Length: 468
Image 1 (cartoon, rainbow, N blue to C red):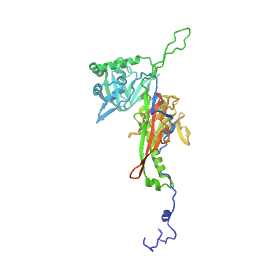
Image 2 (spheres, rainbow, N blue to C red; image 1 turned 30 degrees about the horizontal axis):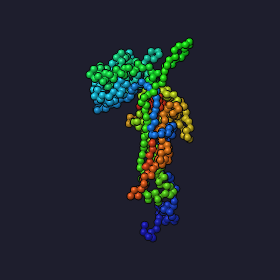
Image 3 (cartoon, rainbow, N blue to C red; image 1 turned 90 degrees about the vertical axis):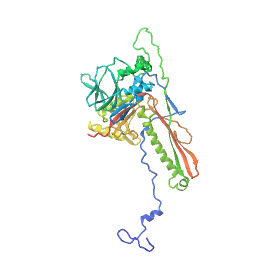
Image 4 (spheres, rainbow, N blue to C red; image 1 turned 135 degrees about the vertical axis):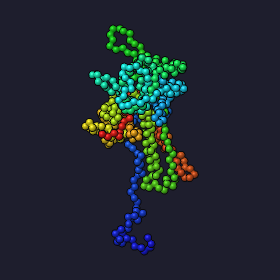
């Protein structure tokens, strides 16, 4: 606008007062603190009991257990050809800790790929167990006979599971259930005859299988732990059994994991732009928030200590119909005493709500810190967006018993570290460089431990995209 030019409003009339745009140049605006979409509720960090760890390591001592591998097998798919990774055969109980990679490679090559249609019987109850089945893709139902002669589904197996592995150790084993394909299934089959042929040429494999056959002869309880001999209900003067409690000679140790970043702030910003909010404080606050988000993600997904990867496979369940029904939640809760909480992706909680609505059920809610949290059987279901959702729209639901006193799941941290702003979280000044950049090292130490296997359970492959 040139000097002397008259300012007019949008209606074409001369402007009679100072405009708001110009006035803002002389006004102090009311500002919010910097906002951040990444911040979530982080219920896992809030509800997990945290135990202070000295020396950065936590050792979980357990009774001696003779239970062996109960893992999940991984495959490689090339076109329509599926192959098992040789190392993954160690997940079979009979091959746990077997070290000869060449023998495992030969066994992997002898696996035969087969396809089964929905409803097709893979193995029949009462038949001789002659083959080991590795389920590459699909869902298989374990069908038994009910009390009145009708079929009853005893369990569901999904991708990565195996069955019939007793054929490797017991030549007289029979199928105790019928394995039936619930969906289209891709299965790799390893005949026992092929394993025996390989063992004839490998003294190491033959000796390993002999040792594994001797393990079940040990007296164990239903959890695979060495049994404690007791006498009960006797009278007179019988000989009282002698016993002792044996411990695991190689207990698992959890080392604290770490998440770090270097925060950089220019001195000009820190010096001049600190009103009405301190720039350094805000930069540190948002960095700490991002670090906590990563911490919760690691507690759920880390391969070493994450909850999804540390759940024992006999504590992993498959939904009977794919969707998270009330029956599946009941089965999940029944696997452990005193379940304290359930964790589920918000979309999984929505799917649970749909299934409850179909049955006319209304879940109760409880107040936790001013938030209304849905429950099932009195167990709160907390949202956790760190639980992954696959492109096929499946996810997992985690059930936990927590606390050291209850032999549950605990968080691990080390309080009292230098420059600590929260327990096990520090912000350490690193100096100023020649470009006038201030640097702070932001560090968090953490981990999680499962004290006994039944403290943690997972309902896997939950379908959250099915609408009826």
